[in-house]
Image (tube, rainbow, N blue to C red; front, top):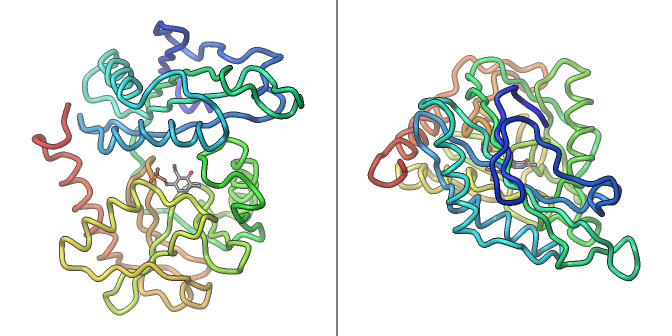
Length: 290
Ligand code: PMP
């Protein structure tokens, strides 16, 4: 995804300006989809939870059966090194990636020790809240025995991509998708929260959606601020009765939903509160500025 013209790539021990080629035509990932990635952020000089994002790509690679050629600390150090090459204050999307080059004996399986690594860092402004709309997708999310859901695997984004495209075609920003059991899972690119009578609810992790790093951070911050947060199985009926809905994810951190189906939310006090808490957390120099 080239989201920007201002791109820096780390590949085979060196930084390259621009959208550098990294995958060979015969690489396993190029035709069989064996790629994992993670996404972190720099904004206002902060890189919240960079250590957790650096650790998750290692876990994703292992979940896919790869042997990561690098450890989490080194990934984090390289991400920090890359950020330093952009003008100060630039908002950045930091994306480490791993993929398999070679096949195993069965051709469609991977050779674990052929794992390659690259980083792509792209200039990407933080989206502003205001116009984010949500619908309900006709497409569901698979169980862990149907797809490799424990990895942040690029292959899963074929399904997420069609969820997004179908929502966009109907004029919405994104869509809730249900899991294989009919409960709300997440959107195509974020986790989801709803508010009812001052209590915050979010789907309980069940292996059918990415239980995100931002999700966990926001739950912790809200609870520390005295808000009751409940993780449970949620239905579309629950969302129909929500006083407020918001989504969390690396790209925008906390984003209030301004419109859900044909319902417009005039005020989003809990999302606003979660955003303030998140930004306070991210910008607290002692803990997170590097
Ligand atoms: N779900 C999906 C499908 C995502 O792509 C993302 C973004 N990585 C998230 C949830 C949010 O996860 P995180 O907060 O760890 O970025």
